[in-house]
Image (spheres, chains in turn brown, orange):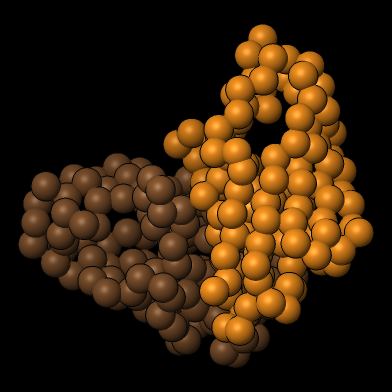
Length: 119
Length: 110
């Protein structure tokens, strides 16, 4: 039981390049989300999904795309990387999501993050 | 504005020296307050959920309490392995969002 698996662990991109951060979970959680963590800013929600085929924007969605074709996977795409996207990215999952409403009665389970540097 | 503030930003303790971390919030319609522990290079790890004022939860040397305005994470006789950043998050507010504090970085010296 791996929980939440993120790949890669580290990535360096040049400005303008695109890439996909992978997130896979084996806990059968409905809710999946992407956060970025920056010093002095804390955790900020980028995008989230309450089930396959359903995604929505979080607090800082610009420059990122997501899709959810299966329960297990929730990739995050950077369309054209910018230095402002240098950050640590975390995928988090949770139980009990309902359509368009998030039930937080269950805790979030986080992956170990992807450290992205954009030069 | 919905806000979660954690204090202190950093705390250094000697092994065995008990203390408390604070999470104060101005969030309407509290639906839950969460404590997480984050080790360097890792994702946050869930510790506790508190739902209503007066509620308390315990796990080993940690005890979390909740009032209508704040939560405390009490650490009794800490050990070096308790060193980590402790994050507080509150679910509530007009948009029913999860609002995160910036964390308290705890260092316990042997």
